[in-house]
Amino acid sequence: MMGRSLNRLLVFGILGLLVLAPLATIVFEALQPDASHHHGMALLQLGVDQHFIHALLGTAGMAALAVVFALPIGLMLALLMFYAPPKFSLLWEGLILIPFLIPPYLTAEAWTLLVGPVGLIEQLIHGLGTPLENFLYSLAGMAAVMALHLTPLVYIILRAALQNGDFRLIQAARVHGAGLWRAFRVGVLPLVLPALAAAGLLVFLDTSAEFGVPALLSGYAGVTVLSTSIEAATNVWPVNLPRASAIGLVLCTLGIVAWFFYRPLANENRGQIHQLRYPSRWWSMFPLATFVLIAMLLPIGAVLAVSFEKALTVGLKFSNFTWHHYHHILSHQSSAFGALETSLELAALVAFGTMVAALLTANIVRRGGRFAAFLDLLATLPMAIPGVVLAVGMILFWNAPWNHLPVFGTTAILGVAYATTTFPFAMRYARAGLAQIPPLLDNASRVHGSGPLRTFLKVHIPIAWPMLIGGATVVFALSMRELVASLMLQPAGVQVISTYIYANFRQGVIGDGMAMSVIGVLSSALILGVARGLLLRR
Picture 1 (cartoon, rainbow, N blue to C red):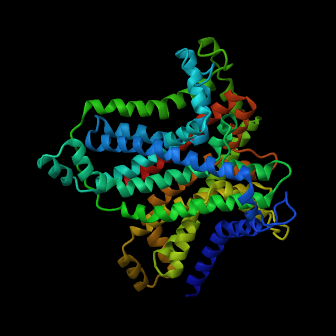
Picture 2 (picture 1 turned 180 degrees about the horizontal axis):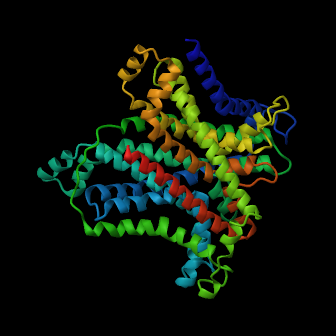
Picture 3 (picture 1 turned 30 degrees about the vertical axis):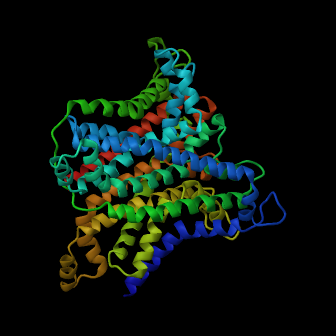
C-alpha cells in the first residue's frame, strides 16, 4: 500500500508541475490589473479591447474556414479509399497521410516559395503565381494551409467510421431501388455524422491554437489572431503578462470546450472494424493524386528545390545547384549543427522521460477509481490547451520570483515544455501497451510472491515494450518539430531545429532553413516509420 501511495504521489506531482501549475498561474495572472491600465482586471479589460475582438474574430474565422475546407476533402478521400480504392491502396494511403507529418509552419513557408512573381509556380506557369499569392496571404489562404495539414487527420477519423459501420445498409438501399445519392444519404451519412462532428471539432481546435501559420502569413494578410497576440504580449515591449494570460485563458477555454465535446464523439466512433474490401477503381486515383500533388508533392518539391539553390531569384537552373546549405548545416562549427544536436538530445531525453512518466500514470489509471479518472483527465488535458498558452504559463510559473528551481533560462525548460505537449500521446501508447496484459498474469505474479515493482518489470514491460517504443518515437518526432514553445522559452544562445528554420526564413536566409527542413522532415518520417514497423511486428 505504501508503494502504491508513493507512486500516486509521484505521478500527481509530475502532472501538477507539467499541467496544473502553469494553468493556475495563468488564471492568477489574468485576474491582475492590465499593465496598460492602472485599474481593472486584465480579463475584464478584454471586453472593450478592439484589438482582442478582431483577433478573436480572426481566430474563429480561420478555424471555421479550415473546417469548411478540410471536412469535404477528408470525406471525399475516405469514401474513395473505402468504396472505390485504387490499385496499390496502401501506397496511396501513405501518400495521403504524409502532409500531416509536415509541420504546418513549413507548409506555409513552402507555399510562400511557390507563389508570387518570382515563385516556383510562376517560373513554370507564367501568370499563375500572383493570383495564388493574393489567395495565400488572406484569411482563407491561412485556413487552406491548415486544411492541407489536417485533412489527413479527418481522413483517418472518417475512414475508421466507415469501417466501423454496417456496409449492408447501403447495399439494402440499392437493392430497394434507391439511387446513389439517396443510398449514401440513408446508408452512409448517419454512420459518419458523429465522426464528421468529431473531426470538425478537432480541426477547429488545432487551427485556433496554431501559431506558426498566422505568424508567417497574417501580417501580409492584415489579419490578427489570438495566438500571435499572446506571443506579442510576451515578446514586444512593453511586456504585458496579464494581457497575455487573459487572452490565453480565453483561447484555452475555447480549446477545452471543443475538446470536451470531441471526447464523447471520438468514443462513439470506436467499434468493430469490418475488413470489407471493395473492388479497385482506376479512376479514383485522379482526385487522390490531385490532393497528394497540392498537399505533399508541391510543398516538399519547393523545399527540396530551394535547399539546393544558390540564389532564389535565379530559378531552377543547373548552374544554380549547390550542396552548400547542407554542408553548412552539417559543419560542426555552425550554429545549424548546434541546433540539430540540441534538438536530437532534447527529443531523445524527453521521449524516454515522458514514456516513463506516462507508463507510471497508465498503470494507476488501469486500476480504475475516481483518482485514476482524474489523473487520466489531467494527462490528456494538454491536447486541449494551445501550445502558446502553455508557454505563457511556464514563463509565469518557472520564472516566478519564489521559484528557485534551476529550470527557466536553461534547456531544461524546453524539455519540460515538450514533455507537457506530448504527454497525451505518450499516455495513449502506454495505456494501449498495458491493455494487452491479461489480468491473470498479474494474479499469477502475486501468487508466486512477486511485489508490484517486480511484476511491473518482469511482466508488464516485456509485454508492453513494442507500444512503449512506438510511443517514444512519436514523442521524439513531435518534440523535434515543436515551434511556439521553443520560440517563447528558448534560452539565450540556444536554438533548436524549428526555431532555426523559422528564424532563417524570417531573415531571408532561406536556403539554409529549407535544408534544415529536409533533415527535420526526413528524421521525423524515419522515426515514425520505425514506430509503425514495431507496431506491425507486434
